[in-house]
Length: 388
Image 1: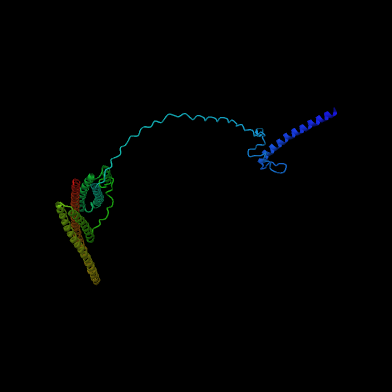
Image 2: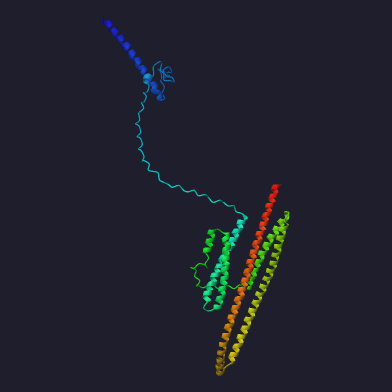
């Protein structure tokens, strides 16, 4: 009985140890396979050889299930919903804006040759108006300065002022036809002679008398201007000759060219005369200075020879009476000479101005006629070309 008990007890112990040993061994091998792979280790067997039966690429161990040793999945944390944005302020009433009126743009006018010519003419007239206005103001101030001492000269200057005013009004009327209303208003408002705020009692500017040499230079400039116009006419003639059926235009241009040549010759002769007279005036002035010096020296010698007191007293009395008479005569002669000189200057200036105005007007009319004829010819040539 005792032997049966001991044998049975030993059998139970061997079975239990074998069973528990296999389970523990399997668990140890499994843990070594998991953690050994993480630490770059491989399971070794008894002979220090890698046990390939208990390790493969998929962490499977001899039919031992791997589900109980898997890492538990992480449950996702539910996020709280985001708060809704606060509502914005309520929009106010829309502002009342009056509709802008539609402004139609002005039609663009093409720039033509006639428009450029009109603009140049307007600029030339505006320059003349400014010059004539300054001259009229200076004459009016001279009249106010001289009226008390020289009434005759003041009367002559008043007549001259009226003529300048007439020319100024004529130029203003001509300007009104060539410029816009705003531009004409601007130029006419700048005229000083018609403005009551202009001080006509101020000191006038001194009159610059034109010398003969300056007049000769002026004539030379005029000659150059005429020659330039003549060259333009020659070019137009050559162009007209190249195109046919222009006999009338050729005749007009040749006639104008002949007139310009005559004017050129006359202006050159006048310039030469002015230069010669200027040189003669210089020589005469030098001779007068020499003669005056000689007379003064002779008078000094004569006055030194008179030593006696009685003769001096008599000479003083006689000389005082004679000087009074001579001064009165000389004063009247000087007034007459001044009047004559003023008359001559006025007549010369008026004639020169009239000549210049006539020449300019004739030149403008001729240029207008030539340009119109050239435009007509161009239009006729274009029509012929279109018909062909």
